[in-house]
Length: 432
Ligand code: SF4
Image (tube, rainbow, N blue to C red; front, side, top):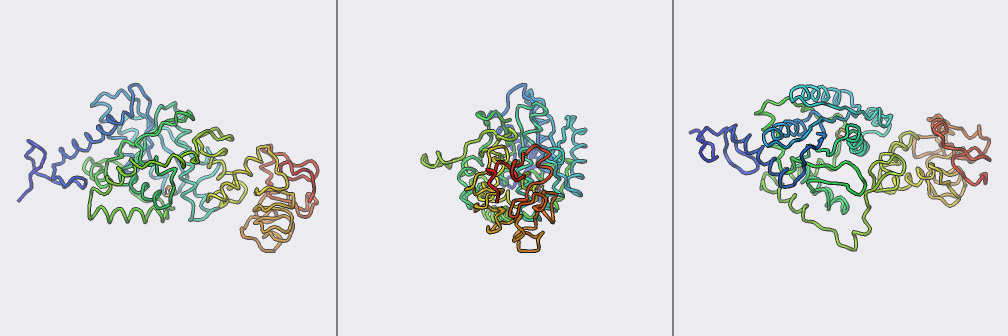
């Protein structure tokens, strides 16, 4: 016997059971309920103001396609007064992003919304295809996530948007809460379930997630029954094992108790960091190098690009390595190295850093001829001034034990060499 739609006074035949509530609904009542919930999310959260230009992060996937469609509908239905623009980031992933961008271009025409595309190649000089060639398939998503976050910010600034909205759904947010909890990432844990982030102190473009309470399954149903044009292939570089575990765990929980997703989000919303810990949390500010949003002196994107450009991509991954590279990037901005540095590049001969020219260090790259891959001796990484990079080889500077992790590109970009020994930065001219 056909089931009747449970919405009051409908009486039509139900065609689906809502994953979130278990209600049996007809197609039209499901659309109405879904759209009304998104409207409640944005109106209760007061994320829009009339007259705002809103950049909709659009990847061509189901979430961002549904977001663009629903916002277009709600903007007209409730007269939000928003100027909506699609903003896409081209990561440079052949066979994935090139195809999904074609979907976004069609969406732009279908919804009559302007589209702005920015590419990693233009912003960072690297495509993800090249990043993966350099870093491998482990850790590649760290680069991609950091670059995308900043790229959205830069794109929004370019089109003078007042707000960025992204298609993060309830499942994404619950997974993120779980991951941050499991990793003990206190700084992210407190804010990852927020509906909006305003970054007021740093002046960065605020962000919001209007689909925060929309279940992934319902987004798929909405896209399917609305016959939206979206791209459903997974990224070819998507190992992201840790999120995968959190996702499977969440799916198991959802099977037993569908409310688990919302309950985890509610838990995340109410978690508060102890006052004594709060002082130790990083404060969002501006990168001293590129001027974009950062919780460190030099932002993670600059650190990662620096590592890639130097042929040391893994040095930007992981907290310790990132800090080391941060200190080095700062030094390259003119602060000099000194003898006691733990930095990556130093010619002092006394460093405990990762890269040192002393010939005695347990460094990864050394110009001494004792430990580099170029000289045929042991090296933990495949980066060497002689073999893999365009650099100043140690024989050119005539100094045994000097660091040769200085690319010609670095010098062309104006990073000065020591007057006495031709090495990077001011190494006190102490020789080595
Ligand atoms: Fe980028 Fe990783 Fe997502 Fe692929 S799966 S688009 S590499 S973050």
